[in-house]
Length: 340
Image 1: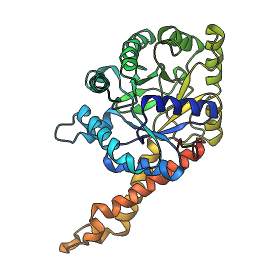
Image 2: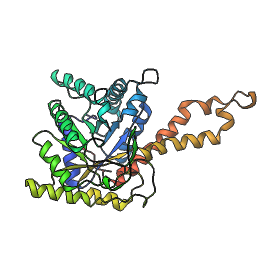
Image 3: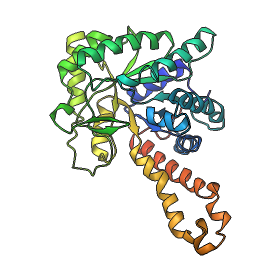
Image 4: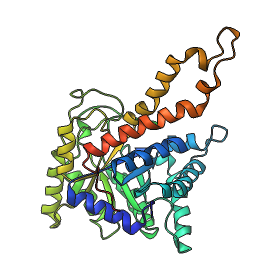
């Protein structure tokens, strides 16, 4: 089944952890970017994760009502249909949901999957993210406990962000400073509150200097080796080796060595949005500049329908984004590792 069952998603994450690779988690906002993600995974012969942020869901819900749940459900249902044509397995995930949007996004989506599971079906999404990084750690983990219990019952994996990622993502903003590094104490408190699997599986977005958005290598001090310290600190306290499934946020502009170190230290999922946004838009801009007098009715002319037809430049956008995803799969060592 191209959309992973709960059992297959767990297998995917276990294989990534054991094999020291990670799945690119690609943000999508439309049917077209979703196809680009599926195509990129298929061309790389990699399974992967497709995710929808609150802003992406609002966009997909249409600008008339801007309903996030409608947008997320529609894209997820679309994915369940079209993914059948791609020879890879993907998991569906929702990205970055802060406290003020839980009631309008993650909780309703959990309810959708709860009803599906009660009816003997699989959940609509395979994982959801709770971004409590703007809250105190105590409040963050308290909400995470409630969400983890519901997620577990719906056969869904929860992702938690316990400390800030710098920059801005869908309205959640954090300064770039020393708070961007998770401590061993933060990790221990997380394990105490959420357990280490016995209360439900979760992915951990720990901070090691990560920043969302666009930056050049060297402008942000990443310390992916910190993940090893966190894992060892928790392992020493609870007696469980490799206790966490780590997520790498804010990876745009990271060096290959930084990515490799993160993979070696337990990262199984890496979010990619900024780079794929550019890869999607760049071919469109190129087409528009090269065909200026065709895409516009300049000086009263009629233009050229073949150049302004959305299918013409849309195909270029899909190919550009897919190619960037293939590159991501290669960097994350997931290329050629698909389940089937």
